[in-house]
Image 1 (cartoon, rainbow, N blue to C red):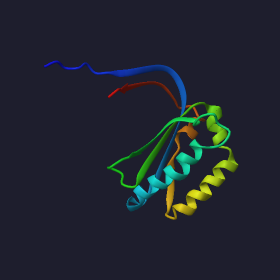
Image 2: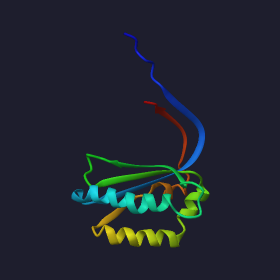
Image 3: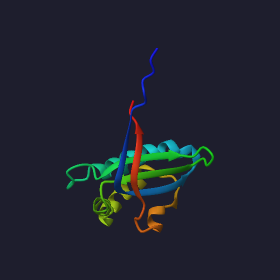
Image 4: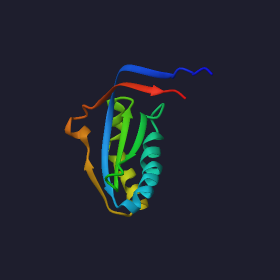
Length: 131
């Protein structure tokens, strides 16, 4: 019996800006938060008019079982210019109003490390298994 060697990609020198947002919601509302966040924020920012393609490479949602109710969102943006364009106050206000309408529960922004570093967090390499 032969064993197939692992297949992977390794990418270096990307220098893509990363946004990290950590929120706290009541544990019983986490699934609803994730669903509404996807429908309003992820798709809203991904499908904005004026972009040839989605302005971010990826968005991941992480939860920490040791901290019920804590949700971490990470974006890898195509460029800082794209991120700043999507972050334009009028765009953000429209999306926030829609999110608030659809998610009526209390939410707290716990951390935004990218703000502490003035947008200085970047993904510079990645290793990924290919299935």
